[in-house]
Amino acid sequence: MFDIDKWQEIFATIKKNKMRTFLTGFSVAWGIFMLMILLGAGNGLSNGVSQNFMRNAVNSMWLWSGRTSVPYQGLKEGRDIRFTNADYDILKDMEGIDATSGRYYIGGNTFSYGSEYGEYSAITCHPGLKEVESIEIIDGRFINQVDIDQTRKSVVIGKDIYDALFKGKNAIGEYIRVNNIPFKVVGVCKESSGTRHRNAYLPVTTGQKVFNGGNRLHNFALTINAETLEESRAIEQKVRETFARKHKFEASDESAMGSFSLLEEFLQTMKIFQAIDIFIWIIGTGTLIAGVVGVSNIMLIVVKERTKEIGIRKAIGASPSSVIGLILLESILITTVAGYIGLVLGTGLMEVINIFVEKQYEISAATNGGNGETIFRNPTVDLGIAVTATLVLVVAGAIAGYIPAKRAARIKPIVALRDE
Image 1 (cartoon, rainbow, N blue to C red):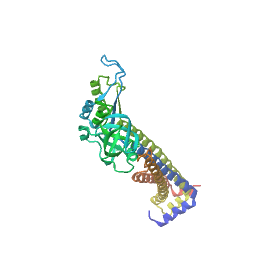
Image 2 (cartoon, one colour):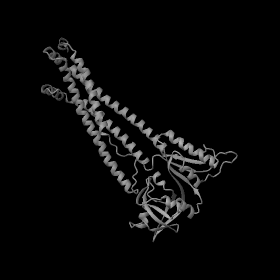
Image 3 (cartoon, rainbow, N blue to C red):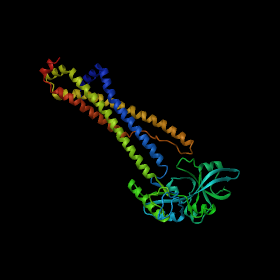
Image 4 (cartoon, rainbow, N blue to C red):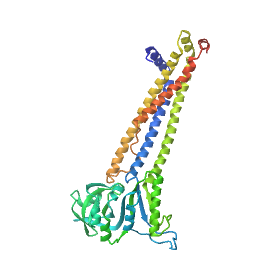
């Protein structure tokens, strides 16, 4: 393998047939290049979509009440279903459910502090909402159980509300007015979803008492202890049947109680991306095979052109292994160099695209309160996969070169010398 004369002969052959060598190498380099591009693009889409899901806990579920659309046990359709604090007590103790929060919305809210004021959303909730909606506390704390038990007039304001009312000054411990009712600021937060941090969070018991909500809850946000689609649907069905019995509606009536499982949406989306990954590998592998076939065809041509030379070699005592080695090394050299070039160009292009994507994400985040909007993120290829694919290509190229080399080694000298 380290015979200098053999390598000089290989390089002389390559130099003599520059165009043929270039076209062979190009087919191999293009194959690995396209595989890197396809894998990077697939990873970019998968990462972008996954990040959008991660803005809330992946195992989140939302439930909301509505109006019945079918009769039930003698009761007419069209009845309003109303959730209450008692339903929250049922949910938080139900098996398979982790964090839970009831939510009561207060519409048309004016927030003011000193001479500053604005219209924002007020959401009354339980402490569990922080985990469900991945709310990030940047100063102070979130609503806690003491706030709930003592119906404290505490409020956690979104970053946009803080910027508008306090202009960078300290907000913790200060009092703002929500519809002319004073609330003490206990925290400043960023929301995971793209609401630009314009929500304020109040203890649910306080909101119900101060804003005449009684024991009413508009919906529930919760996390479930499930990892599969079947587990998620089983918990959802259990909750639906429990509430159907309590509020007297048909369990299958989605108008009476609506639900949305982020885990179910996430798992179904990931299945789509798994199918896309398989498709990408099929296309990429097909491209690589085309390159390997090209190498094999070129090696067949090389053997055909050098038939007399091979005959002379064997006539003066060259062993079959030396003939095989000569052709095989040429095949491996072309495949290795071309594969490496394709690998570098493919991964390099993905890195350049990644830099551009990250800059666009930063711009989006800067204009959206820190929440960048994207469906394409980190479109890079795992180095291990890239190197493995290249090695597989080199091995395949060696096999492609071995077949014509083996055939050449079997040629009898007298036959080779007569070949025209």
